[in-house]
Image 1 (cartoon, protein in one colour):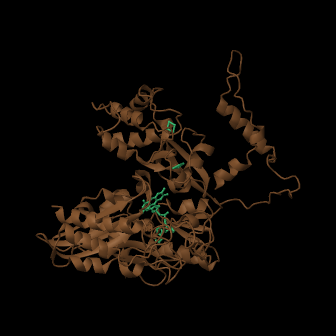
Image 2 (image 1 turned 90 degrees about the vertical axis):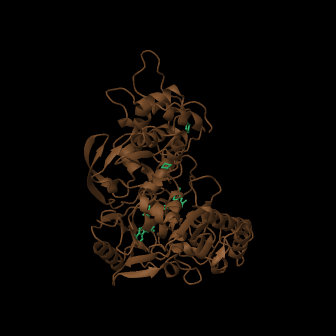
Image 3 (image 1 turned 120 degrees about the horizontal axis):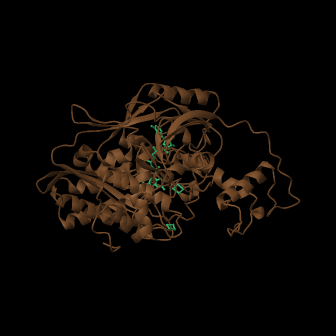
Length: 336
Length: 229
Ligand SMILES: Cc1cc2nc3c(=O)[nH]c(=O)nc-3n(C[C@@H](O)[C@@H](O)[C@H](O)COP(=O)(O)OP(=O)(O)OC[C@H]3O[C@@H](n4cnc5c(N)ncnc54)[C@H](O)[C@@H]3O)c2cc1C
Ligand code: FES
Ligand code: FES
């Protein structure tokens, strides 16, 4: 790796200040949580931020006290610190019980070794794993002016929301968090702000260089997940090209509020198929107020992919996604 | 990648292809001492790589590079305390292998995709290639060298030997560390729990069934035969 300075931040304020200080001094900076994504980029000399290039300064967040906690607020909101590891999330009984999709999503991430260091914030903010970007092609995501997948090897790329870049958002937690209505807590040089899941992730047509609203000195301090309404159940289903240790070809986070066998409301968010966690409102609407039958689940699956625009080599993702949604909805309705 | 680049400029052509004879009267230099020593000497003498280089290409003159930032850390490795000034950019793997000379921990992919570099950090398995030494300040690291007690291998290591769990052996230190962590958490895992705990450790020789068997045997679990489930 290129030489850089590691600075240990002891507080969020210090982390923001260190990042700003470095930026003002003309040095590029990156926040480091578990490092499981960041270090791979640095070893390959790939910019961890499109505009900034390789980091001269790493601001290590791991020493910030209190950001590694999972707490339940008075109103039942689940407050997850940005430094909570994926292993801690998987092992948390409350998360498993009440926010099941999130625990299931965390469990599908990579391997125990990566879950032991990988954090919630790092998972959500990880850079794309498009093979062009990760192999040093000067694409949008690296600050370039092109997407090589558009006319190239796009087997793993987006079928929704693509253009001008066709990356898929790599995070497994993101679809689950968005489906559960999570809000993202961000600290920056200004005041702390709270951003909804719908606003946190950014489509390439809004800004091709980045995947979310985090600016250079913004720290994602955590996520708040509202208390689920009575009768809520949720699940995350992920399909990979092998059994483990890789990102989703397609995945679905499904949250349903059930009243007996009638679904009051649902939210369905897809992973692995779009540059952001991809919500499918038409499919959700079909479930509202209905008894969940095999027939209905099939229609929901079909509605979920109605807007798909596959590229030359990823049309397989359309039926795959349809079936992922169908089976997850059906399995969830049957879950006690 | 730094490791790769270093391998790339190592004077491969000058490394002897034969191992030193270990016959009677031969020095008791090990292969590792020999290779390590000779490579270091060549690097120190500034031997330039010649293999595959175009003679007409301009000579690359090594610029005086400003020293890479360093940080003093304290950590425990296999129960021994160390105070060390590490370069901020060293991975934990680099620190263990190249600076503490604990070469039992392997380096395979150097990108979180094989598991050969697995060590325990405060009891949890972690890829040493994918974390920094400077982040280990105050932590306790265990490597494969720390598994034996009083010159005796651990029960798990013994089970690996008895069940032929290592073939080429390259993945073995990582498998051992991941399995050690599992058994410390769950003394009697099922075969499925073993597989789940070892999912982050590839075995290129594909000796998975024997590895699972060995872990089950070490756990004292009855179901230690038969690979599949
Ligand atoms: C082989 C392999 C397989 C993987 N498989 C999966 C998978 O199946 N599913 C999946 O979801 N992920 C996968 N990953 C990605 C894995 O890195 C993430 O899951 C992990 O959670 C990242 O967390 P981290 O703390 O290590 O992030 P880091 O590497 O520390 O950071 C990642 C990025 O986020 C930024 N960042 C980190 N924390 C903050 C913060 N608090 N505020 C602002 N920015 C921040 C960093 O600057 C960096 O750009 C895989 C990675 C590897 C190497
Ligand atoms: S060398 Fe670390 S995972 Fe392969
Ligand atoms: S024994 Fe050869 S890689 Fe596992």
